[in-house]
Length: 452
Image (cartoon, rainbow, N blue to C red):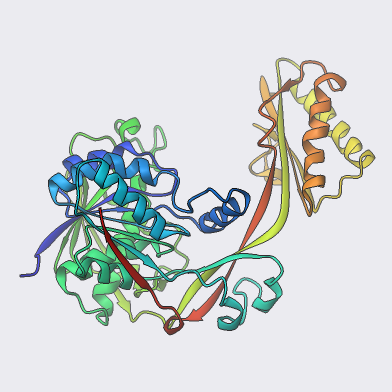
């Protein structure tokens, strides 16, 4: 007999999200499913780059083991199944590590699934034609490509759940699909029902960024106040078999769920709200109904959609040089004048040492670092400000010149220059992200099942 209502909780909204709120959801959320979303556009390319630099890096999300150790005891006790795209570039290794953790915690026999198949790095030049951002041939990226991963949909997760997996670990799966998959599995939804796929994907979109729908990234003191923002609860969706959903959170946690938080998240990172593309449906948010039905309870329904697209988006990470960056600070009377002179000194010294930069920025934090030329004139001189110096270069050697010249400001600079440490964070490789489309039929997933 299929479920009539399920409770799906969010465990993280990105890679470095806080761990403790997930423990609260696992322990007190009465969840059927707990989903961890851990990726941004550049996450996989970061993982590929780190793997090149450090062969011992296992390739999965760096907080995965900590998250699993803390939530698995509660999930086992409460019958909660776990889904995460924290497998990054090595879902199988992540599944094996999770199996070891289950065994160490005294939970043998837990069925764990690794879903692989999103990595197209070896095939992208035969599968794809044009770069979406500029229309250039994908073949032009051949010399700089680090990795290419398709945004997979819910299919592989659904298969793993149908096979009885209690923990499902994937590589790149689109954020909403992590949450849609348990709905398809629990309710037996047909994947060709565009409205159900769209409604479920829309619910997934509300949950995918974690606390953003419960008051995170929302509070603006005096305008949009949120109670106990230091203790934000992660969202929970009570989903019915019709797709109608109530967004809520664990009682006693901080934050707020109301129509405003839901609507802000609904349109977050959405270009055309009538045609939001996901691997599982084309979502029309304009038909959504958002109704407050109680404290921290919002009914969300009415989303319609069109059938899933024939193509899938592929994110391609490419080497695009380096960034050198450093900071120093001034405080007290005359801080702005000293910062302006420091800027002039550095510009001249960069010319003297032959810095070849595709872009050079010297920003004053507190004055023009965010809005740059659009910043209004300074009416009241700040008591303190930071000077951020950054350059984008083709080589690491050039990027390192930034820190070298900023170091010189310590003793051959201006009075009262405050220098920051450490030194090992000043130069980093730039990973550019480009997109293309491939036929979804060219992508196949493989399922690896193992037990703790």
